[in-house]
Image (cartoon, rainbow, N blue to C red):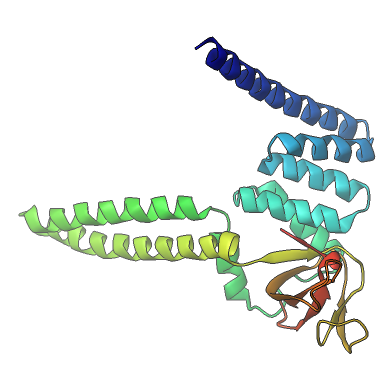
Length: 257
C-alpha cells in the first residue's frame, strides 16, 4: 500500500512539475518576444510544446517565426493553431496576411461562393457544429409538438414553419460538422518547407519537373510511396495544389499540418 502511494505521489509531482515547466517556458517565450529576441522566443515555445500544445501556443510560435522571416514555419504553426481551434481568428488573420504578402493564393481554383462558405464553416470545430445540429433537431421536435398540440392557427403556423426552418438549419449544421471532421482528420495537408520545391512527374530523382512551389504553400497529400525498400530510401508524396495541379514531392520538402 505504501509503495502504491509513493508511486501515485511521484506521478502527481511529475505531472505538476511538467505543467509548471510548460507555463514557465511559455512565459519566457512571451518575454523574449516582447524584447524582440525572436530566436529565443521560438526556442522557448518549441520547448513548451513538449508539455502539451494549444492553439494559442502555436499562434505565438507562428508569430515568432514570422518575425524571424521564416515564412514556412510561420504558416505551418498558424495552420496547426487553426486545426486545434478553428475559431482562432487571430491565427486566421495572420495566416491570410502572410499568404497575401507572399503572394500565395490559398483560394486558387475555387469560386467566391465556395471560399465564402468554407471560410464561414471553418470558424467552428466539427464538435461545435454537431452540437448545434443536435440543438436545432431538438428545437425542431419541439416545434412539431407545438404544431400538433396547439389549438390556435397562429401557433400552428409558427410550429409548422419553425420546424421547417429548424430542420434546414440542423441539416446544414450536420453537413458543416461532417465537412470540418473530414477537413481536420481525414484529409492530409502539408506545408511546403523548401523554397522553390520541385514537384516531379513521377517519384524519382531526375524525372521531369512539373512545377515548383514557394515555401509556405499549403498542399493536400494524395498518396505516398518509397521508390525502393532500403532503409535510407526517400519517401515521396503525391500532392495536389489548390489550383488542382498534381505532382510528386520529396517528404523532406514537406511538413504535415
